[in-house]
Length: 500
Ligand SMILES: [Zn+2]
Ligand SMILES: [Zn+2]
Image 1: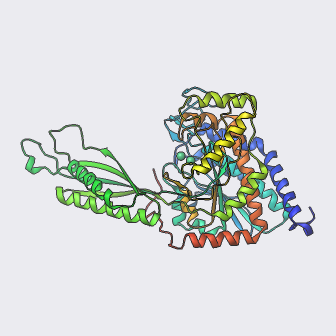
Image 2: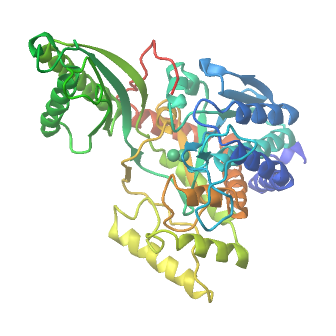
């Protein structure tokens, strides 16, 4: 490559082609890593083998690897290049309990891998693919940095415990995401789209009440019931609901009712609370009001309580500038294509759940016109072939109105510290439920392998645009500043430790 020509548009495309080709060349490695992580199926913060595998592979690929960053043993940083801009690619690799499932299988069939921890776990959120796809992007970017000889750094971030502890929020507390110029990531989904809009911030706190045990009939006056405190706390929260914002949510589960004997005054009882709001600052404030209700319940029952922070994460700050760049690259690269066998597999899998003929896309619940557009696209695609197309093998138009995901992701905390982009790539059939055995099955199949490789290519091409055009990052940063002007309130207390 002639370095004099590097900044002309043609050469940017040439460099992208080289980087994409590199990802193709690394296909076997990417697939192998994805399959191994699928087999390991390690739960949040127990991803020792998965983390070791990434660190080992990245070292071999010429990256500087640091394991156990931000005091989280299974988090890592794998860095290549030097100087600015610094682009972070986010990988996740934790599995979910109760979802052990045979790969590429269209029936629910429990499979507990010899390679795994022996737990009944499976990659029900597709994080085996998520990590492998992020790694693929990073390898492509490394090739680009070498070929272009341009200044810039890429970091593959190993972010464990997405399902169980929100490690990215802990990393945000340490200011990790402030050190980079942009973060790019993806998530396996049932369709191909660039993600926009926000999600809910979420904070979990466990309250354990302590009372005095006593014979409930002989000496009730001597007892102080911890279970009463839990019940009164829950009632107090029911009254709080009238005075909080519409989009806020409060969920609870009684995790210890203090025993099974009604004739004993319960000396201990425990309740786990989850507070969600559209903005992290609001969630933190709402959570403080729940704390006050716990104090009130303790006062009323003459009990005491301990409060234990479990985890917390923030809402997502969207970045249209990055979305537009990603969309152009996605359009250019197209979407994964499938063999007849893969379509057949997808069709069979899709018929194991109800919603297989729904209309995909994060924008569809918010805009009837957009929904109609997707419906028409689906019909057009369906007319092109004789059999049922359970896979959404087209790119959804970029949704540019407000979208809101009531669920939560710790990518939110990254997005409060640097411009952040997410895309979805179809990794399972249309309408496939989240956290399901069907996800585990598809994520271990050739459809999953295609998704991760493709996601890697789109993220890589997007990153190249960011290295090549200072203006894009400048605009992304201006937008980021505007959208985060109210300030980031980290939901993680200073003394909290990442755990599950
Ligand atoms: Zn999940
Ligand atoms: Zn996930």
